[in-house]
Image 1 (cartoon, rainbow, N blue to C red):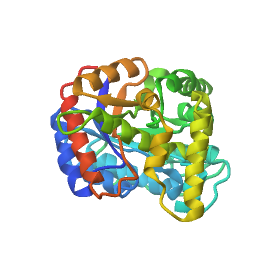
Image 2: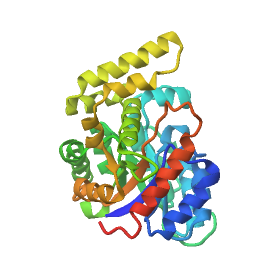
Image 3: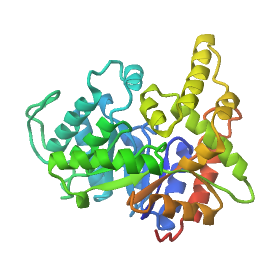
Length: 350
């Protein structure tokens, strides 16, 4: 089991280089960078700051670009890095695409599958692709620097069963969502991914599952209570997403889902910010403990081994985030926690 860091959301851009160097020096395996960090440009910064560690876009929204744009950008970063780049992509929810990319995608999961196939074809040197949703003709060479590296692997991301199946069909791996529990991996994620693999005639040995645990490491500067409180706020923010209703039903958290949506709707109608304290009170400590890793370095290491044994090859550690913190010190809190994560997993043997 390998350990990586996930930057989403969290540290200041000016601190990414130092954090990445610290992770590499401690023997960590990878770095994941969310799209708000400049899409491909942010990944380039991490590549230039390091020499060994893998760098992934985690997760880059597909519909914000074209197949050729994604393929050419990914190949450039693969050559810059000497072969240690991972193109991590996802379709996002319809609402995110509508507000960020400016259109309402029809059948986004199927459209995303076709986009990934188009990107892979272009990365493999094909000049033309004629798919269900995308058609590319006469594409030029993607060999930007001629250094002879293989195309980067493509990792897909999703939450609901259709996207999970598509992950198994077209992905070299998966960048899993931070909200996934062990139950969800066992009963929903892996069965759907394996069904996709069967449909595509693909082998499990050629696929890497990357879990994304939400983590808060406790030391003399923090407390378990702080980690639980932050976990409730972070999870409540995710659980306000309508697209995750099936996930909430699976866990028996329909009441919590409805209460969170009610807070969200009241804030939208009033034009006032969401009350983080109100969101926090909806979720129990037990829900946080089922999803998040909260504890001392020893406890977090033990939880990681226990929870993800047989589930994932790599853990992208996601610092528990309080999006309702109005004090202005949230980035620093995440940076400090990520440094604690680095030290907790220095030389980790999974």
